[in-house]
Image 1 (cartoon, rainbow, N blue to C red):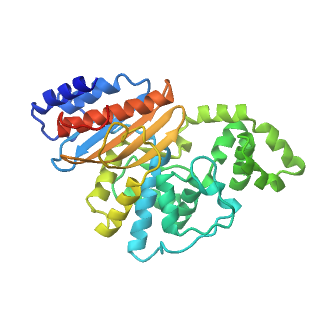
Image 2 (cartoon, rainbow, N blue to C red):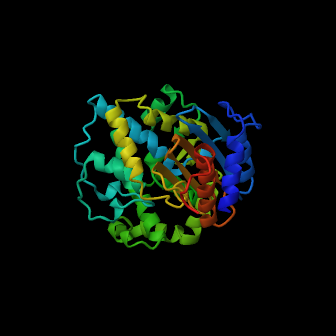
Image 3 (cartoon, rainbow, N blue to C red):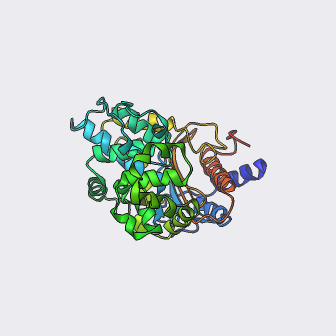
Length: 356
């Protein structure tokens, strides 16, 4: 397998490599390679690639809208650092985490004792490297809310990228089970999620579910919750966020090239992304060069990974989105990693020795 990959990379490197800005250029060698590989995925797949040294670009479904999952946390991070640069946000400020801040899903803060006081910088870091939903919930408030994030995206030319109803937490999921849950608090909705998942964290919320509210616990069963998550895939209006591979790649490039803020802050964001604790089996899997990246997960159907690969030939932006997966999740991650290796081999040549 390794020899055949390298042979393909050598053949493609011998062909002309003009810069391709649109995905309607099927004769571009890298685009042809990507199309052939992505056709094997049992999922809807989009990818955008740009070599920041040469400017060469390629993509497949690069302008298609995808469920971003937690990749949408990148613009929240950028906005926080921009506000800090303007003196409107103090990243050294400490924030005391209460039960109302907790959010199920990924992240570590939900498992800490209540009353922890991380700095905003700590929250941003965990929002990226462990994709912490509790940290994200707090930082969305600190940067002015979802509408301010979406306003920033519009002003900066991200026409298709937008944050979803993140301030509502998991309540939109519960509304798919019973529309009357639209009137409960976000804190109550998270207590119901923890209970349905059988988490010990449900104990924190027991005082909320007394009297008539005890019936809510029966309505939000594990089966009902799984059905709601399945229905969520077909509801882009309530996705955590919507992004395209190309716009995400442009956002990553703005960080790498320090075009949106001082290099000091761009470098800090890149350092955070290089400390990523998740997604090791995706873009970085078969590489032995550094990768600054961010995941976006919604098992078993969504597995996204976007980032900057520090290849020997120069930095390469890769924005990989996969929705509607129908195969094993582990296979999906493996496929992403193998395509990332092909991309790096294309630019670096067959001498690349990362992975197998």
